Length: 157
Length: 439
Image (cartoon, rainbow over all chains, first blue to last red; front, side, top):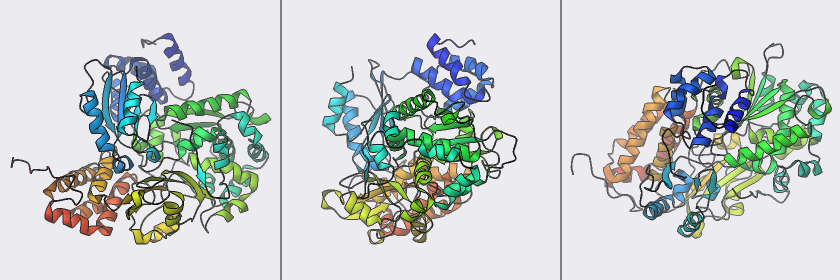
């Protein structure tokens, strides 16, 4: 395998390929492993990934661009994803988004100059009972208020 | 994600005790007779297991409501191909947030249901397709699977029998369409989540072109209790053609949003006012979505409806994923429909023209109307576009986008007319729109 990842990640790649009767089915798990290690899926790795799962490279590109969770460019250390679907909008998502934009001095889709925060809005995260909510990296944060947002951000080092 | 608490009625619910006693850990589940139902099922002929679930009237709780036992019976017994069981944990219908409670609090109950269902259809491999954003639930599910392998509950000799079963987690990557069963299968195979034409149905030709059953998390989690207590017990709890309890997610403008496990057929009024504590700030209810954002909204005078598949269908809405969203009197329904339509536009896979184009047009028109640029003809054009999508696509995402548009324009037409005529919203929020090219 020519994919350049840490030995732990390569071990996970080998393991995950045993879960399926063909190699292509391991594509999504492999993309997750790459992104967990590098923060995004660099274009230059697409061909190596294609070789491992034995599909044309265009198929890897197709999958990468279809799924919104795969970043094709680097994001900040903390990727803030605010839900803007119906329950979160009803419970005041828009005011909180304004608050975060002001606090970080960036707009949706941008990263702070120090590379610490990237701000996105996303469709339903399935935590409507805690609306308004957001996800920062792997964690969900619900029942947001400006004060709670201050506390959460203060805890991010 | 904090450890979830589930709420239920005075009888204590069915899955609630397991969730509240943290049956994501094996030792806790074993205290509550965990895996006894699986042992029972493994000692029975497969047909009897299917029969038990069919008679219980357990319906698919992901949204479509198809009888679970009947679905299992479609698996061809004489096929030499391997059979697959796939658990749909891709929950992503706006308003719905229940399956994660089963995983976070009762992962072992789900695993026991998986063993029973796999045995019923003679599958030796199960994939749990879990939405990519659910990182913590996926970790909790994985640790339950690891515990089960360690205790020889899974693997080559399930619970000391000669039945072999492997369970793997497959994480999605942020595509709503992958909750649709054939798109989910494509995604599992390492492709874009593009729905397949049916037939062939997955039970005949599904994952890796083999017979496959796709069931929702909540559906499978009820199976162990049905095996333990018998089909009659479960069937009696619900309504005539819809057995048992189920989870209702309640969100929006209510005092106590949350996930409630209640008997099928409890009225919407009881759920909103007795369980969820009524409308926030003592305001009046303006509209309520009963079954996830794709279900047509109801007016306040319609909330005495029983929350089951048939009763809601009878009044022109649907129970779907039982995601209830309440909106108070100050809500702009045009705004809420725009947010809903934007979701379906964003999530359309793009394969079928009516859905790809239609959701885009509806999104654009609603945005224009919202910002004061409405035209009277929009009030007729919008339902026309929705009708052009309805029934004309491979998968139900097109219908899911069209139904709310048809519902809102039918039930609240006056509000859309008023926006179109006056260019103003009664909430005063959207006033900055200027037509393109006119400064």
